Image (cartoon, rainbow, N blue to C red; front, side):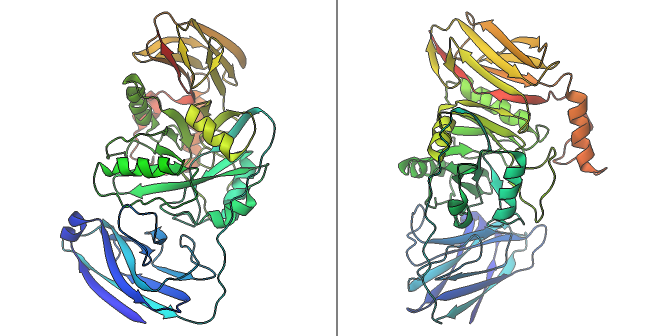
Length: 467
């Protein structure tokens, strides 16, 4: 057992938000235990992780052995098992590193102690989980949540509980994007099925921006330190055939890196009242500038240690709905990239699909004449048509199964649609405030936000227009 104590200052944090504590691992080691001790406080938060001797520095595809952020102060890595968030398997000899994420360091600095214990007792070498390929061979609209967490990062709930929550919500697919790690696949690879397809995901989590990686089995290096590193991230993801989506570009953690080549944008995260109008404004500006980015939604739900009943602040709020020829991970990823879908407030929220001259969302149409919206479950609310210049037309939805058309002679660059609560607004506000149980409004919301902000119930993906 070895204890290493080191001072950490704000100068260290400014130089590099990742602080490395090296230690040597001899041949024959089968288990490593690490404990971090520091005076944790509101202004002193240090994250925890590990890299083995094959790490070559940022950016690398090698050497990552785990990350738990600020959720844990201890982990173990063995040949046959590991703490959630950490990768079991072969333990190569050489120089390893405990990595500390310097999230918050007080003005006077702090001191961190890392205790490392090595063990060489005989243990088996357990394999990594193998990806499975379940398919439901039926075309249709499929519902999913593209952003949630388990105790493999900073949630308290086990993968089994999140699985149960997804079944309770009636979902068809689910992307589990634990922070900076891929070890949730230990559960979700073998349990993916035609009834509920699990989509490979990882949330790139830094102090100045979060992004989701979809469809990649390998770990992606999150150790960005420069605004331009976002382009390295995008290249790494696309080289592996994955999709990149920036998350919740709004307070309190907006995307403060340069904007790289992204496939999707999380336009709606958690309940609409969680500042999502800011994400939508930024998405609208990017579309108007000529970018083609698919809109997706995700709850960012952190599964608690018990299964909660359905409500405004649980899994699949919002729900991303995709048109698929079959339900499979590959089909979900292709539809996400193409924009063949819409976002709605919940698994039972309004249906909103649009076409232009028969072409689906995500298409490019030359010389378009008419767009058509098919809407279900939103009688008394408002349908809003939007192009690159902003709102084009608005109309009250007369019944719960309705079809609307709009001529496109004046539309610029793209057309998309939104359902805005009108008849449903009072009940939506009541449901939201009831979940607070007389607590103060979260996320620094004001009472005026509840009374004045338009509440979107569904958002379509755009159809792109050329002349």
